[in-house]
Length: 111
Length: 123
Image 1 (tube, each protein chain N blue to C red):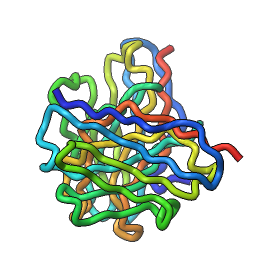
Image 2 (image 1 turned 90 degrees about the vertical axis):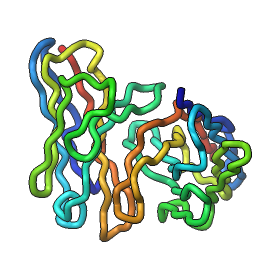
Image 3 (image 1 turned 180 degrees about the horizontal axis):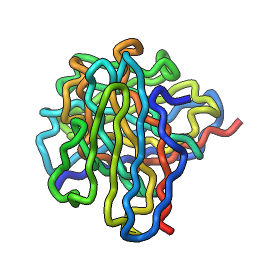
């Protein structure tokens, strides 16, 4: 059971918009710790997609965006493309556990 | 370009040891802390261990504390994970990841990861 809760799966047709939620608590996201998002295709290195809640590293398309409010964060992907099919993980820090924490991951299927 | 390449994985019997390596290149190794993160089959990501840029501080997940040791050789630009008394539940792909945040402020975040090395612990 992950400290950060993500939906196991989401799906959407090409061109559509999907969102992936990441729900935490008052000791992590709600305490003000930043949320980061990673894209992971099996057999490859995870890729930083969004850092510090809403910032995109160089090279990440602006189709990807992040937001945070209260004890939750979200990753939105617009203009879905087949290449977006991957697993997505949120990550933050928990002050009660004093550790880096990850969400359980969400598998995005492009229909 | 920045590269992190893990090695040392394999099949090992329960109770035995294994040492993983992560060779870094394309950046100033001594400027960054590093994590080992693992992914068990069908599971999500789990942090394993962290080492500061100068090796002065190390932190471990409760699940590996006392069994695993993280270290680094700054002269070789290489990160290590010594894994002792391995258990079946340690079976996973192990990734090294470069930290560009500040763990002491809860700000760790990982901009580069390796492709991972698979450790399989057989009983």
